[in-house]
Every structure is written in C-alpha cells, then in structure tokens.
Image (cartoon, rainbow, N blue to C red; front, side):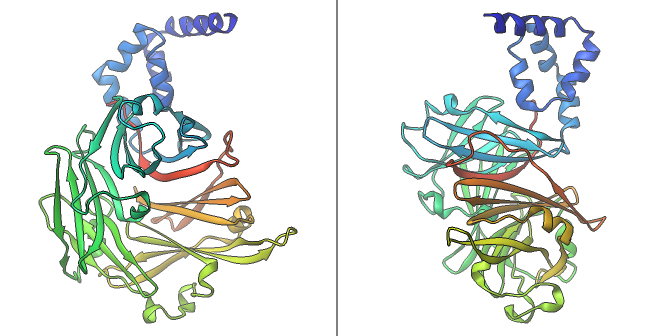
Length: 399
C-alpha cells in the first residue's frame, strides 16, 4: 500500500508540471515507457492522443534502431525484450502474453520471425500458422497460409523475409519472403490491404548501372539461397514492379580470397550472417575448455557487400582488432542477424556458453568507413532460457 501511495504521489507531482515540460520529458522516453504512462491519469493520456504530439514523437524516434529478442522459459513465461541504440543502457519488456490468449492455443510454441515499427511477426510451430502482433494498438491478426502452404518455424530464413509498413507509418503492412521455388527465384508477398498473397517470379536481369539500386531508400534485398560459391538475392521495390534476381558469387568461385581479407578455412569455424544485400563472415578458433569440451572464440569479423552490378560479393571492411579483443569470449553456439539502414550496417551476434547467452552489437558506418561496438547490459533470467527469435527493426511509433 505504501508503495502504491508513493507511486500515486509521484505521478500526481509529474502531472502538475507545465504541459510544455511534460511533453519535452515524454519525448525523451522510449515507447514501452510511454505506453505505461497512458494509465497514470487522463491529462497524460490526452497529451499522448494529441496528433501534433504524436507527429513530433514519431519524427523524433524515426532514426532509432531497435533490437528485439523473444525469450521463453515456459509457455507462460514468454517475453519480448527490446533495446535501442538511442538508449542502450536498459532493456525494455513488451508484454504480449495477454494479447495472444484469444488467438494462440494453450501450449503452442511461438517463434519470433521479424519486426517493423509496431508490427511483430510470429510463427506457430504446432499449427504452422503465422500471426502479426501490434502491441501499440493491441491487435493480433492471423495471416492466411502462403501459397507454399503451412510452414514450421525451421522453414523461415531470417535473411529471406521482411515485414514492411505500407505505406510507411500506416496500419497496413506487406510481408514478403524469397524462395527458390521449382528452380526459379520467386517472391511471395502478402498485402494486408486486400488480405491476399501474390506470387511473382523474379526477373533475371543484370544491370550494369546497378549502383546499389538506390538500395538505402528504395529497394529491399532478400536472400533466396546462400551457398559456398555464391548466393541468389531478390531485389524488390513497390508491389507494382517485378522483382529482380541477382547472383553474387565469391571471387574465384569460392576459392581462397586472401587478397580480400578472408578465406574459407574450416567450415565449422566460420559463420555467415546475411541481410539487406550484405554478409558478415565470423571466423573463430577452436579451443578446448578445462572440462574437455570443444568451444570456439571469435578471431575475426569481415563485412562483404553485393557489387555494383550484383554479380559478386565484394570485401568491404574487417572489424578492428581492438574491438575483436573486447568481444571475443568462448562460446558453444552462435547465431546472428544483419540490417542496413540510414547509411549503416548493423549486425548482432548471439552466442551461448553452457546456457548463458552473450550479445554482441556491431555497427559499420558506410560513409565514415568506421566500426563501433555497442556494449549492451545484461538482463534478468537469461540462463537456461530458450531464445526463440531475434530481429532488428525501425523505431516504434505512437500510431
């Protein structure tokens, strides 16, 4: 009771501040905190519903980059965690369990696929369905089965799909994913406006004036296939245009490319992470622990990108040794994801060591040709948790 009284007094004192100051303070908060403020009292709720304030807040947060992780220990203990590069000192909890009760059967196994703004996409492993969750509007929507039919969680590839607001900032969305279907690179696209799937075969077109296809602002790049000799990547822009297919290959057909700063080495000690027409190669050394277990330690990370004509993987840069020295820790397993946005390539690596997870966030500024490492705080109850999905996303919005 005393704690409730203290919280009420604090909230009351906050509401007595001048409205301009209240708006300024709220503008500095991340959306999960703002959602909690809505229930404090009517005056704060009215500020949050003002369209001018909503526009200002959305503009203020438009450049933020979020990393979301879906953690679960039991089916009843599943939480979506988020952290932003604008406030990297704490993790935010996004509670979605109550929202899912009416849609997800008890005991269903959820896997977090991808996110964009306020949209979060999950796959249901048992029923093999896909649902979209919007924690701001508190809505859950089942997406009809794709033309490929129901799919288990292992069928979805992180680098081969995207969730897009359409148009940006609206409550409508597009879910697109790429596959090599019947030996043909194919784009599958769901449009929420018409609640329908479309299937489009990608056009085999090599553009000498590719120039990145103005990749930052216009095109999205999806990995349909990645192999030892090269990749199949589909580039897509608007729903009205035919997607394009590119086949970047490694120099010399995948042979040693020492002049580019990487080599094939032992496949077991090399991890490839793809995303947005880029690739990170994480190279590790094998070590034996005191318990006589085979572990790995990161010894180098290289960034490659698709060439200007889309025909080759080109070496871009290596993570400096001083950063490698800070992030290298023994691990047993590792996964990651990669995103390019606003002139920067961001990669996150999640490693597990005997049930304990470690997260590495790396960023490469393309214009400045500079690497940075974003140290992240630990968060509670990570040991023995099942990490059921990870994704980068753009900033959360109030609408």
